[in-house]
Amino acid sequence: MAPWPEYKALLQQAIHQPYSLLPELPARRKAASSISERQVLMLLHGIALANTWQYAAAEPLLTRATLYGRRQKQYFALDYGLDALASLYLVQGNVDKAMQTWMACFELGLKTRDRNAIMLAHLGVGKTYFGLHDFHNAKNHHLATVDIVCSLPNHQSSCEAYVCLAVDLIKLCEFGKAAATLEVARQYLPWARHPKRSTCEIELYFGMTLAGSELYPAAQLHFERAIELATEADFSWGLALAELESGKVWHQAGDDERALTHLIRSEALASALQSSLFLRQCHELQYQIHKDRGNYLAALTHMQTYTQLSLQAQRESGKMAPSSRVLKKLRQYEAQLELATSQEENVELTSRLRKHQDLIAQLTQKAETDALTGVFNRRALDQRIVREFELADLQQQDFSLLMIDLDHFKAVNDQFSHQMGDKVLQAAAQLIVRACRQGEFVARYGGEEFCVLLPGAPLAAASNVAERIRLQLAQFAWAQLGDGPARMSCSIGAACRQAGEDSASLLKRADLHLYQAKAAGRDRVFAA
Image 1 (cartoon, rainbow, N blue to C red):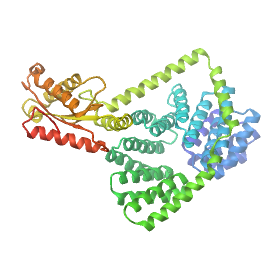
Image 2 (image 1 turned 45 degrees about the horizontal axis):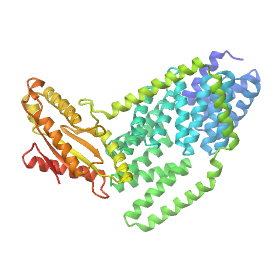
Image 3 (image 1 turned 180 degrees about the vertical axis):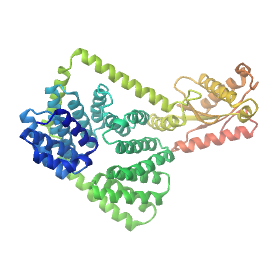
Image 4 (image 1 turned 120 degrees about the vertical axis):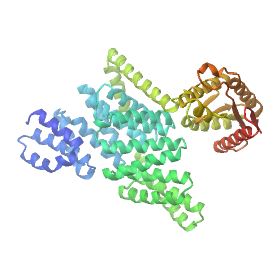
């Protein structure tokens, strides 16, 4: 058999540069001097083919090579072979065979105490649960994946593990955590298996976190970048999803012409990929757009196609679920894994996971905090107000908000300096926070404007809070900041949510009341 270093180099080439390796593998296999050498080369050939998405050619090679490796206890690259074969089954929609194959990867990891095999198994099982829309179980397995890659510095699956975890968080509507997790994933791009594809995915999922927070213009910029990257990398799946998500955002923004352009492109790509999931979404949204525009014939065509695809998905849903036998085996392997890990290792793993969660929490806080004033930023406000509206509806309670603007703030920058302007903004933010009770959400809306959310507060209570804030700013000894203004004041608009009103309308009314306060002479509260 050839020296192991050569095989290790070939494995890395099969993973990272498969196109360069594929032409020479058939001749190498033919010239192999032993059965075991031939089987290893067959395994590497299958991995390289799978990494170039040539699944039909990869399947028989991977099936034979992994079977031989397990029987003969030839473990070199067997974990990557099993992972590639399971991924292939998952793409084909054969969930049970995919899970069985990842169970074999689990078994291999337990038998050989190979963390890489266990990590690949967790990553794959998480993807399977994600495909079954069980996002909580997907998240649990991807957290276990992240836990292991933390112990394998600069591992080639680190980026993919964090990206998968971020997508779970997006589906669970934890958009701040998802964005923070994607920032971590970005740090591991230099070691990713497919850096261009991973870069595209990160841009795409960043767009989805922003779209989930209704920040549509910012989301569209990320989708445009993802489309460019997917086109450059010939990444059809990423391109189809980026076009689809871009179409959704243009529709939300009210530009249905652009939405249809992206949806038609996504539909063509999804047809080539035979992705019924993407096709269903494309036809459903096109039906909605054509119906809203009065193009009933086109709407009917898309509705018929959408219905056919949905019925087909319903018929096949039984085949998608993993068998009870496979799920039982998964629980057994997880129990074995827990028993096989010593108490010392458990402490070590728990410590790493805690560090990871602390990092995510820090990045989430950073993503939601205004760097200058320390209060929440506009992004956090947009996310919070949606949740507060849902709670107000559920509890059938009042909901008010305040829009606050510092009077004559431009003069502070012009007369004293932008550094003094920053000090004034920082002091004003702390005075607003101090005037609010616990549970009241304070955010910097932009420039010298702040917003306060007041769940459960009717308009009279909101007016009282606003007056307390106004007095705090008017009575503060501004001279203590140094060579700056002797006095500052603010104008405040208060509004209470009306029945059926959305957040954009409530913000608009509060902003209108703010300008009425300014028009009436500033340093006052206006509440209709």
